[in-house]
Length: 339
Image (cartoon, rainbow, N blue to C red; front, side, top):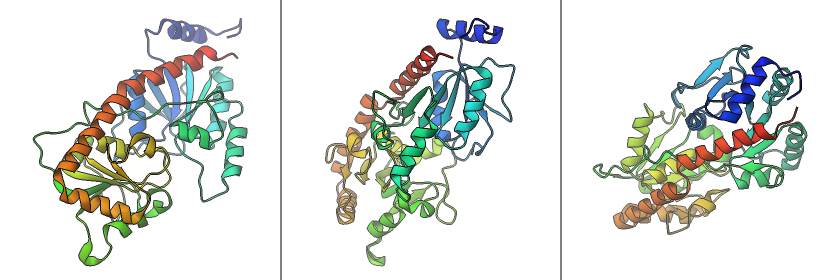
């Protein structure tokens, strides 16, 4: 900071160094379920109500997450966390100038394959040229946007495995569960047509299914997060058809709850699921159909795959690891910042 640092900035510096008080982080609502996990870092998040409002159908607002209409001038902020690089990044730059704090850009998405990818990558790199640190949801995503570990970082998902667990008393229905929001309208990235073609080869050969998610006319979201957990715990198979997503959160939750996984082998998924060890993966519709039929008929295989899926979440994608990595990133971004 400069020699003319304000009392507010001085208090912020002391708090950062001592790490005894929560950081004050300015952000924007983007991904409710993901931001719920971020709140477990213990810091205070102030979300500017711009472009998107928190949808409580996707999750409750945590106690340390505050939605504000404008930036509170009385709070000594430590950091701006900008999810995605849309027009919010321009707003973040303006706020940075007023508060003299770093911007941490976190990208959830991949380049949209429906448009020219090279142009999108160039536009992001230009827009984010003055961001203090760039972070991605996976190494796959980081590379897709043209960054390396020398110019950016990534933090993989974390799952609260104590909550998303196996209910040993629950009976699992012999069904293929899918959990997707706005599925028909997001066919290009979520595989709605693929699901239809593999689930219902013809009317007589339709497989038993359950579908949840906010898709008007098709399915409703779970009534609560506890209800969603029960849905996973009582379903034998979880069927993921994502085509263009680093990794769906629902897939990880289902794995943690011990579902037998059948999934496309796209993006980051092959890094998480080892075929025939903790799930069955393929990009061939015929093979996906065969995997589903096989698991519907083989309880032992489904049980073994489900247990291995949970072990993967507990060992490699637990929430504590996720939270610790985020806290390291928050403090490192602040420590590296020079006005």
